[in-house]
Length: 224
Image (cartoon, rainbow, N blue to C red):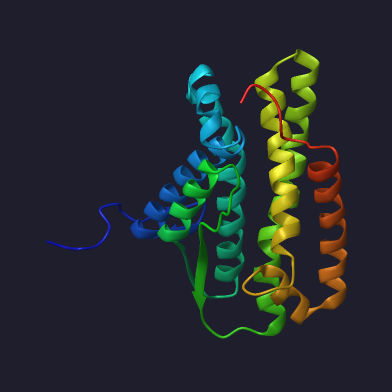
């Protein structure tokens, strides 16, 4: 009996994903959904709020915001890496996913779902482009979630408002955090390639994240 993934590989939008990669993306997406559902209610003490909301709505919001933000960030790395003729695949880090869920029970979250691993020869510019792709996608997703946030206020839907607000806040934070030039974060690679490009993306990202998340508290509050 084969010890490989039971999931068949497939081509999606012209990009090939192996069975193992699809499985890892699904596991990471679900684990992050659970972790952020718990995080936004303040950890284990807020589980009653999740149950009162019927479980599905808060989980749906977390999967649609944090889950999508993290995974599209990683897929963006893969897309650009493949563009530069790299062999690239996402691999989930199960120990870090477990840590994300456990930390969320305590009311904070440390989420590092995995990474896109690629191999092949690259120039510093190409390395920089691959690293930059993830944060740029997060900035783009902010624009996608803004109409939802506005629509929620117009139609008076608390769930739509929360969905939009958290989508904006999470993507703003992810863009800024990943551009910090430290350790394995994308910012270190981008900075080593081009200081002007790094500054042009990091500074507005950091200002947006600080203002929206830490000053205005966007994304927090609501029924769950």
